[in-house]
Image 1 (cartoon, helix red, strand yellow):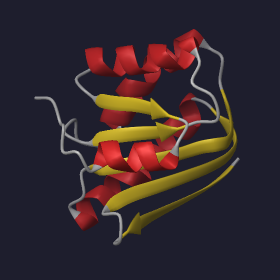
Image 2 (cartoon, helix red, strand yellow):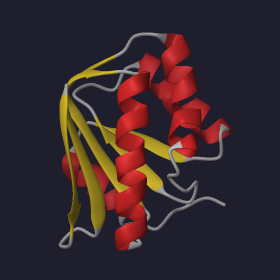
Image 3 (cartoon, rainbow, N blue to C red):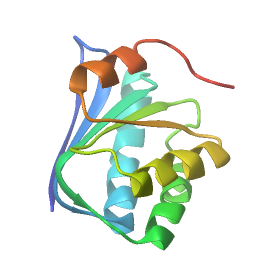
Length: 125
């Protein structure tokens, strides 16, 4: 697994791009770095590009991902767009679990739609 993390001044978004296997341990590692960049840039919008990642099928790991994100220090006020190849019901479960954890996470398979949502400032409190 490899990943890149950056800040897009143009889009005003913290961007993570993951290639390879994406599971709970990867979420924990990347979330910490996203949280650091979030603090440095004062940006509460995160786009994680998982189109080249193989996402875990483990329901238990998906269920634990929101807690790992919180423990890594990513603020709950952040809007998190996950860009994936195909939106499947198992991945929609992640949206629900995240919402139950007080996070705002949305799945997209279109970069433009993900950026538009992030720029909508629709954070739910």
